[in-house]
Image (cartoon, rainbow, N blue to C red):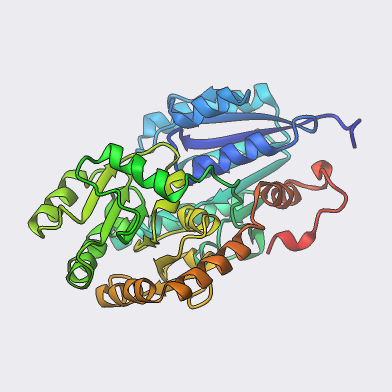
Amino acid sequence: MSNQPQTKILFLITKSNWGGAQRYVYDLATTLAPNQHEVVVALGGSGELQTKLASAGIKTITLNSLQRDVSIKNEIVFALELYKIIRQERPYVLHVNSSKAGGLGCFIGRLAFVPRIIFTAHGWAFNENRPWWQKLVVGFFHWLTVVLSHHTIAVSHATKQQLRGPWVQKKMSVINPGRALPDFLPRTEARQKIGDLLPRFPTSSTDPLLMTIAELHPIKNHTGLFDAMQTLVKQFPTLRLVCIGEGQLHATLQQHINDQKLAANIFLTGAIHEAADYLRAADIFILPSSSESYGYVLHEAALARVPTIATNVGGIPDVVESGVTGTLVPTSDTQALVDAVTTYLTNPTLATTHAQAAHNKIRARDLPYLVRATEQVYGSRIISSPNTDSRLID
């Protein structure tokens, strides 16, 4: 195996910020064995992903025409630019990520005769709140992306099942994301560092603390969590909720907190670099999303052994098995969320049992697992280990 020539893999992703899809690309790009794989990442913009890849010694190519917003002019420029890059780099594998990069990427990859085109579906845009006719159009292009790829990786079973149409199911397999163990801060230190960011935040290790890490976006349903807090603080007056993340709803959510007179209980920190490091500050982690393709933060909370409560949507059940490794509640069911939090706060033994079970389940989904499973999809030419287990993919 050591005498095999390197196989070039070209990753393509729309945005270079730092989200779940970007972490996925970074993890694969930096974990694939460098003596067996030559990795290049083409991406839109110049954000944290590009910075991290450059620091890791990974070659990046910026596509200024690759933007999330749809523009006929930009799409034509992007198509020409990508075609030129593919002809120059001549990858054996073109691994495209995200909806925008996926559709055009697979099409241009076919035109350029790339031997192996892989698409990873991190979620479907038709799950977003949009008019029905837009969902039909978006669904068609998602279907076409999968058809044009040689194979599609779905990050959860729900992601695979949600896309219907001829030929697509047999071209898709499920590979849950892997994750390296974050550098978790001890509970007291994590609370103190949060307190350094929030002058009004009480850092006492005895006060019960809830945490969520999510973009401040309607799909994450922070307002539903705030409504639950309004009820919970009546029973637990010192209960705190820390919301890590930034987004379009920051001002709206802060006003909501003020209107409910919860400024002493709910805190918006804004974006925090490597937010998962702070997870052990929490007694309970909550993700109340109305849609979620997998839920990286739930994966991280399990690694941190923090009890989790989440909505029963999308790919979340791939991470949380209700009553075993956490608690799942219906979307927008405030009372169910209140009951779940109350149960964990009043029964810490149950919470600890669920958290340990989650850790035991998730710790096997590490980066070597992700690489081995993905290499199977890339093809037998570049399998790095003769002992790769075919059960890694579903």
